[in-house]
Length: 214
Image (tube, rainbow, N blue to C red; front, side):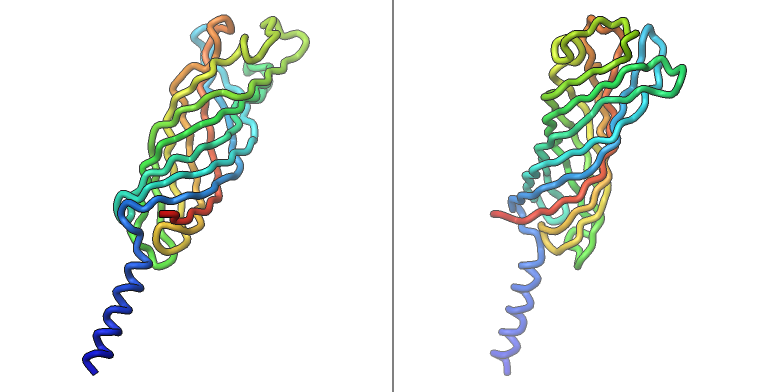
């Protein structure tokens, strides 16, 4: 009888350990979805109201569990940004479409630390981006004389911060994630010859899947 009892206790311990995220565990995942991009615009010291544009994003997510319920995630992301013309009289006439390779470094808190099925997710951290695509179009009356979007319009580098909230479905370090994030750019991404300033703003809706690998 004692042997049977010890066996049952050992089995229960093994089950609980297999469900708990291991400290120092690496994870790998994918993430993607839709985003609503816009920009904080100004010209001559006056703020302008440009329109938003819908785009997509996709990422390979490398993670590292520091302790149960707390991890670091680095989503290597391709994301579309930019703006569309604003409402009539906004002063914004052109359309700017940008593509970035962006890598946020996110501290991720999962509550509870070891959910039985569904847990909440909170994330925040800096983001570093390299512009890979630039397309600017404007009416024929546009007087900017822009001929090369890459050289004449946008800078290559952007830096910002990403915050997010969502849920994770699944035990341990792996599972399905549903997140809403906001990407706030700090830098003026326009070249000096353009005049004015434009700072990226982006609202992201993501679905992802994470698996432990080590």
